Image (cartoon, rainbow over all chains, first blue to last red; front, top):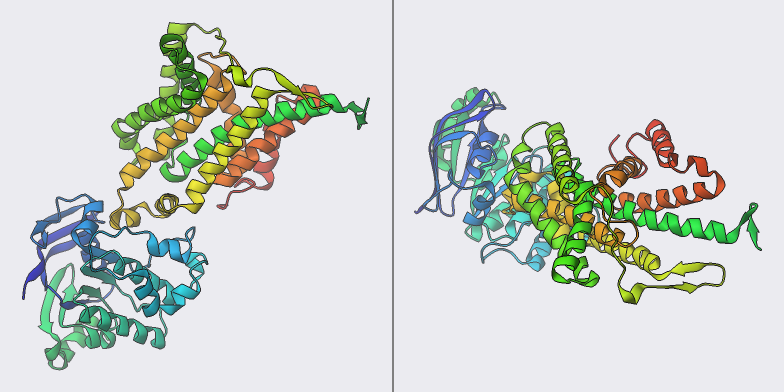
Length: 233
Length: 295
């Protein structure tokens, strides 16, 4: 396996507040890695710090052998990282199609618009409506679809199932399987570990701004007690 | 003589035309302000100075290098837009992290410095700039005499306004601008160079002011204070239209120009203040402006 993303002793701050306390993790090429943890433990901040949206950070992040910390924010996407935020970030003043076409294509291997519409038929039907007129599930699909077009080879996915109906969550699971079969690398932040157990290869459990546990999906059953305790579920 | 509401129709149409011409300048200038405010959240007080610079570039390019009016319509926005891009990159962009008031104060100071410098060098009195030969003279429409240059100003400014509207609302570049207005950080995380987008937007707004300046040069005289005279009215237009609305800025510009012209016919004493009265009424009834979305 090739190491694609390596994070070492990552600290991050929001103003005065020290949120990440030395995160160390890695993701191999083609792997789907899930970060679990309770609210406020730093899962979202980890993704945002890797992407470069949180700028107050210290430590080491290398992606495909390149130092991410030194890049301005608009260079991280060109390196191959794509970010799908928790709040989805669909633009109200843009139509569905404009939202889809917004991120520029930087590399080959991204999906064509025809492929995306085949995977997400609802988006094609509603391509002329304003982006925020879509349902929550459709907005999540759109937020993922627009990154898939760009040729990004690694997806940072922040709580894609939050607030969605079970049937939509299932559809997102199908999309993630499809991406995995195409060789996409995924870093997934989830609270819903029943969903995550179906798509992830490996898990990190985050606690107080650090990675407290790491285990492959095969050990999920034996780790249940620890998970119930740390996640409070 | 035909009369409308006891007013000769010639006087009415004449003032309507004057109103449309003033409205053309209001529309071009408030459009530039709206474009800049929409993305940069900067209330660009240097807009009047950029308008004045546009007129001066036309005048000096003609005097020093024989550059004709038509070329000046292209050269002036490029020069003023380029200078403004430089100022945005080296100075204004450093203020984005601070309160928006700092951007306003900086551009206000910049306007004072530029206008003061020009007044010191060129004097306060205006200098004439002749319209191009092709646009000299006028046509008799039967009910009134239309100077060709004035008709040209109305038509050309309308074309520019609609082109800018289409650029922002209908193109992929415009979609980037609109998205960056909503959430610049996310747009930048998509790999779009948002700082560059901001610089280009500021240059676009300043370039629009410069085009207005070139158009104004043959009608009003070219003087260092021509911008500070008009800019206060233009800010009132922007307040009435609603900050950040592109179509709102354009429509309100023409509308208030016409309202001002008509007031000159019916109650001339009020023509200088009618826009401010409308502004006060709009602020009471619809504080976000006629086309504004945020309350």
